[in-house]
Amino acid sequence: MDEWVIWVILALVLGVAEIFTLTASLGMLGVAALLTAAGAAIGLPVPLQLLVFGLSSTAGLFVVRPLALRHIRQPQLSRFGVEALVGKPAYVVSEVTGRDGRIRIGGEEWSARAYDESLVIPTGATVDVIEIEGATALVYPRE
View (cartoon, rainbow, N blue to C red):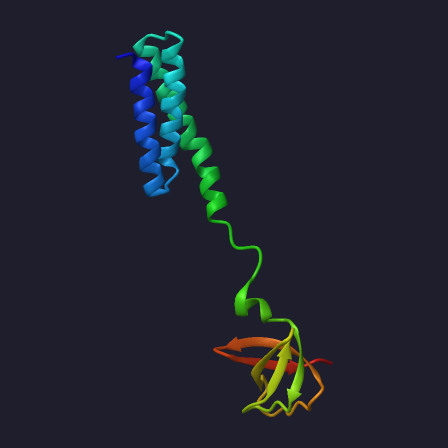
């Protein structure tokens, strides 16, 4: 069996293992094995093949993997779900007190409470959503 076939088989095994682990390490080793297979296909002797594999896998693990992990660990840039409602303006549908009330946020009606329990916010006022607790929005009147 030709040496390049062995390197391709090793690259495939490492690629499949990467799919199941998602660590980026095995993927870099698989790419290094593919580069080595190319070197073996053009006729490099075995010591040079091992050198190509060693250098390319080291470069992949110490250069590319940290970049990939940095992109994976980046914080999410946009909020969604109820977190996206915090800071949005809302319209008071029924009087909001420290105990209860109803507001409309972008077409949806929510139960609401005043953020400051001593406030009474009249119907028709515009408020800002300060926080969401369960299915209740805590709001404060706009000034």
